[in-house]
Length: 441
Ligand code: ASP
Ligand code: MG
Image 1 (cartoon, helix red, strand yellow):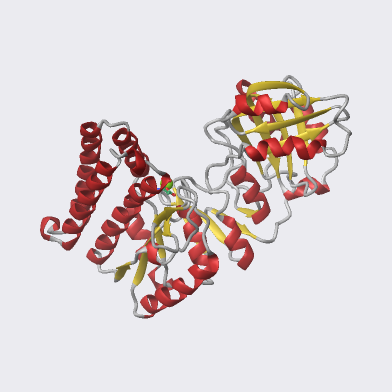
Image 2: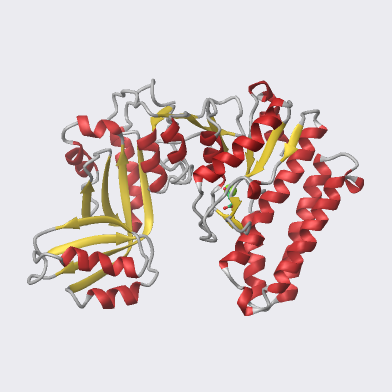
């Protein structure tokens, strides 16, 4: 909290708008309370809630002088009374809905912003707590609501600039919003950076800064590759590809609003506020390395459908994909041959039912514990022979499916999950043995 207040304070001459996430693990803990309460273990749920309350009170007492008699203390207690009541309602099976989960999860951000605004004021920084539910209008798809950008723009433009003009820093909750009936919604897990990007883009800010606890976007997952480098500058398309393929730094939707307005996005490290982070912009800066980063996604299921009779018959692919549509499962990667179609799903959800439907149209094989490795970089399209180089760098690993889309900024392939570390390390050694100092740090 203090570190974040310091970061905001140092930038106050730039008239920042702050979008804050919940305190560490709070959203997980609140959802766990809800799960336990819905399972009729009400005492246990109450106990968990008390622990969350204690942690928030302790943080708030650290941040705010004379906390026990402060308005923030009363407000925090009110929030926990409301939460306790919400958990009670989960005893009724009819109330165990995604809508209730959003109501409960929203308190994480409402608590963190309340404490943070108090802290800023304490430090002599004029700040104003805003309610994102009055600003971020969404659809009613609880737990993964889609923002309504035009309604949100009107609200933000009405509410935020006057606060800034008055010399105060608006503090908004990330992650949450409300639908057209005013019911609380959330944008999906880890949605706070998405919220920040929406707010920044709709207010036409100079830049959007995502403050995380990593140095920036890296050339590979540093837990697998200790010598991974920080990428100093990367394009929107490259970063979006990486976000989707598991580099957990950014929510995959985060960049969309910024891309539309061409607003640069910085990924910065709150533990090292002086660091330069990663700058994400529309233009791709040229680099002597053909790729920017190696991403991976694990826990995938690969499905192969073969049918000598049917494959080339018209309508076959439509029938195939209709099955995935019916089961509401997105397909990550697809490859086809004369007699078969291979594809990957990012989990085994509904798998049995899907396989049953697929067997109506062809012979089905399923393989679990697969991973996609993805080489990402706009330079891929100008560098011949990348696939040959990649595959010879990992010639001991069996490659089961390959895909390179028309955009050619990523080359993806499927391997067994237990070979991820080996594959990523070898590829990293190969492609980043001589990193371009203009691009990597
Ligand atoms: N607090 C929310 C979550 O944990 C949103 C976020 O952290 O970005 O998913
Ligand atoms: Mg978070």
